Image 1 (cartoon, rainbow, N blue to C red):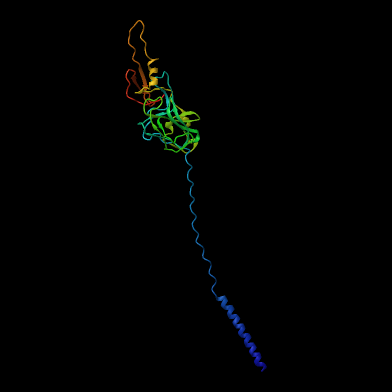
Image 2: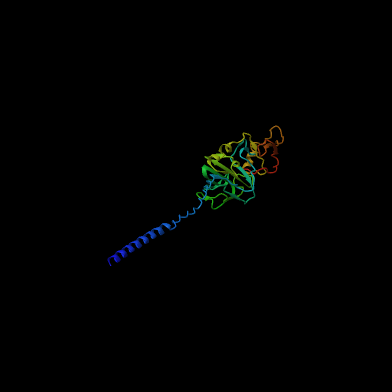
Length: 272
């Protein structure tokens, strides 16, 4: 009986050992855990270049589609004895055509004067100032302190003040120094260093005599007074015919003449 129990215990121990070994062998035979799959990485977005800074001064046209008739530089009007600096340009156009602000800015002055007639002044970036004169009408929005955008109408073409015909007298200044508007019109300047300040301040020393077809009433006496030839007391001779010498509107130096006895064709409407 004792041997039976001993054999049974031995058999149980052998069975337990076999089961344990089999379990261990099965664990060793199990497939290894699969490696984690790499996560797909989205490609990095290409860097976007920042937009270029806005131009410091972008100058449009005060009267689009119309050319300068009287340039910047020394000029003598028929009723003047000496030449003087024409501090802007004259652009002839039909009465009532809109006159536009050439750049963003703020209206600093708007009013009327005996010489310039109805005018508007606008201050821009970099100390630049644009000036529009001889207007037939000032836009109601163009009041001192009002902001204006490039291309906004600030008035209409007219012939107010001392003027020889419908046009706008247009100036650009910096620190009260007159600059040639032709150096700015229709151009864009990215930085202050790009502004053509030195070039625009230059002008020829040759005096151009303006040829006009209409003389303002206030200037007619000037033409007849100092220039007329008085009859001599002892001689009853006729007055001399006055002849003007005028240079063309460009700087080529070509000369033309017009007599005071009869007005010739209008070359350029100008102002005093």
